[in-house]
Amino acid sequence: MYNRFLKYIADEKLFGRHEKLLIGVSGGVDSVTLLHLINRHGNECAIAHCNFNLRGKESDEDEQFVKNMAEENGIKCYVNSFATSDYALENGISIEMAARKLRYDWFEEIRQKGHFDLIVVGHHLDDLLETFILNLSRGTGIRGLSGIKPKTGHIVRPLLFANRNEIDAYSDENELSFRFDSSNDDVHIKRNKVRHQILPLLEELNPSFRNNLQRTIQNLNQTEAVFQTKIDEIRGQIVKEEGIWTTFDKRKLASLSPLSIYLFELLRPFQFNAVTVENIIDSLYSTPGNQFFSASHRLIIDREKLIITPIEAPCQELYYIEKDQEKVFDPIELTLTIESYLPGYKIPDSNTIAVFDLEKVNFPLVIRKWQQGEYFCPLGMKGLKKLSDFFIDEKFSIPEKENTWVIASDNKIIWIVGKRIDDRFKVTKTTRLILKLKIEN
Image (tube, rainbow, N blue to C red; front, side):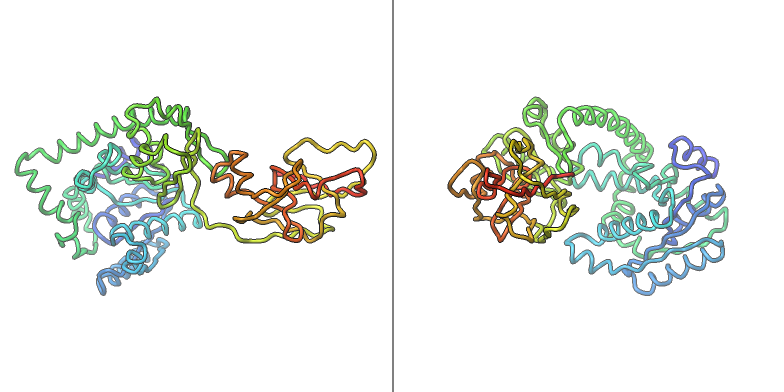
């Protein structure tokens, strides 16, 4: 088995002997076998063990077993204890999903702090087959059916070539000690039901079922690779990154068929589910302004594009500018200068520069987000105008409105930053000193 392990990590380009590895070890036969193989390979490594506190005394005994094993092998051991049930309840997710998120978030934290190259986990071939059936039962696309990948980001799975019987045989041959998880026999857990009841039944129908399913998953993996190449090509034509925004060209989207498949894949990084994608398509050419939400992002249907922004709490903070300041760094980088008004002075023609009659403004100035119901007097006008009406006239998208900053003097807006100054504070022939604000970034 060790030679097959070497071949697999070489074929899949998972890691070499020079890389520093963080190994997820539960104490079960899979992870203990994984640790033994990596020790034979000679990598510098450490162990990470999660105590999910789901099996009472057994969980604590697993933790102590892993600590003892690490000490016997002279390997550094990281241990964390999680209130998994509470976390699942608070976040409205299953225990399995909670444990997965807690585990991988913590593993990544250790990887970065400990300067590990990769996180190594003990998924094997039977896990791959079980995941395929679980995903098939839930309903999934080609990505779900192509199963667990040998490498995902910084996570590698070097045991995917071996089935459970082969791992057990290796463990027996090398007299490895491990812990048995009693919950693995609980068929009320969906994965266990697949493992102990559904897969054996399918093997009764066809003794070659496992081998056939493995080949099918390999074929689907290759098909997915071709499919993703096409998706990446389309993404390059339709999707643009604009700071923290991502935009999709609606006109180019309309040329895709079937649109539901393409849009689902393009929106996958933003966690929009299939039902939401269908709702987005239904609203694609209705009145602009419709909004759709995933757990992490918001999508807004604008006139000519879809705009995707991260979900963030609205900023209520105030930032002050004193008269003697020369630079402002938050929330916008500004340079402040005071200049004399001389005959022939030319007002800069740039949205990044605003000039004001210094005697008309009172310090400290305040930089803040605009508020509903506010007014200002746009340069060139004599009457007041609602900011919300100004945004409509200027065809601001919803994210543009939300990300607009204003600068105020005595709670009167003097500048919609980067857009328009207030006429009441403009430079005139009677001006003696000019306050100049310049956006640097």
